[in-house]
Image 1 (cartoon, rainbow over the protein chains, first blue to last red):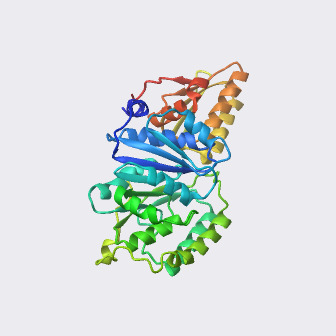
Image 2 (image 1 turned 180 degrees about the horizontal axis):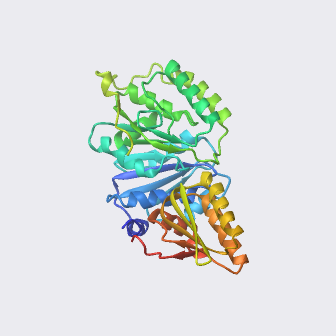
Image 3 (image 1 turned 60 degrees about the horizontal axis):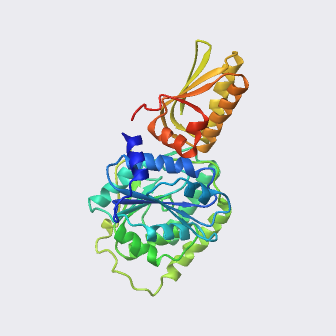
Length: 271
Length: 106
């Protein structure tokens, strides 16, 4: 029934508080965005609850916003920044505009197939987590077609994270994370990093607030055609690693978790 | 992605399953070339077991369709799965390419 479900979703407006908001940040994604929207819309529409799609564009100079706007899907909202600010800014704008009880952000390249949203939502709906993060490094995760350069850079950056900002997580950078609305709005209101390191800042803030984070092993496939420069991103990431602590130093958030074991947990392997 | 190739009644058939993305375009094009080398001009691409198709793969299907047209023949996309149907619809390619059994799975 999923094509019929998709058509219904495409035409019938959802209520003011849907179950799920899916936020997709974009920057010059004219080549990839329509298949990604199709895959997300087809799958999530079949799950049997109300949901909305929020495409948060980061000042694309190509036709991304024209293509998305022309789809005319009732429950798709396009937020277009007038100029390029960074992925962190786009995700923040999308999350803060979201109305769902749960909020997932997913990269525009479908490298983490949307079918895994079910596993991401389960701990949130069961009130076992405030945040679930896709992990390519947990037991049971599967990673395919990742280039040697990307593998090396990822490993190096995760080692740097463990040394400089230890959060006890195996993969902080997977572009597939879900939140309760309360957690998302609280954290993204405080988030200041506009670039690619925003995930780290969000997870650091989550820890400061004593929120529960559950890692979900995912099946991840490298999607060619990235619009980012990996070397520039890596350098910015290292700079932000040091800056995050300073940025939030002296600020008093909710107390740290009384039981650190509650902070990080890991779910079973992806099916 | 898995590609099963056969030729049947002067028609090349490619049955695809899994994720048809940029990584899979080259093996797909190679399989097409092998069938073309046998003199086949009409093609059926079975898409019932494809769970995702990206723009590079769509471009490969458009390329095959154009080639068939240039040979006064046809490439037909058969039984597209639900996600592929939605993606074809959103990209407008459901109107530009020959798609058979569009009600499959609904």
